[in-house]
Length: 186
Ligand SMILES: [Zn+2]
Ligand SMILES: [Zn+2]
Image (cartoon, rainbow, N blue to C red):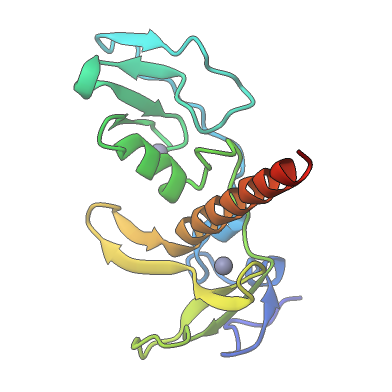
């Protein structure tokens, strides 16, 4: 029987341990991606057309488009009832990557932390305790969620943003290493 109601501040937990706490106590994204609702635009939505390069193995890219040019929008199948987002102003990119956690470059779900704790991020002026996750690349504790914003209809996901940044840096480093190796072997 799980009798714990609250996490102990500063104590390190595995994600699966904190998921036993009551709903809403820990950031919901820690549950993992789950099943994609895979909603389609409502029948009869004008101007909908298919992305011919769509693949089921790619949960990031849209299957449906509407509009052309700077008005072109992609359909997000991850929202419970779906939603349209502009492709030009990176609205789609931002929404699917940072709200739902699907990487635009890897086309997979962004890695979640293994370890979490309630604490304060180093240098944070925030007095309240917040959920932190351990980043294996930087070897430090990071805030999982940012401030509440109307645009995001909730708190922004700092973890997803950080993971995208880290993997971007890692891929630059890798191509640099490949370049060095290639020039050395000439
Ligand atoms: Zn969505
Ligand atoms: Zn990091």
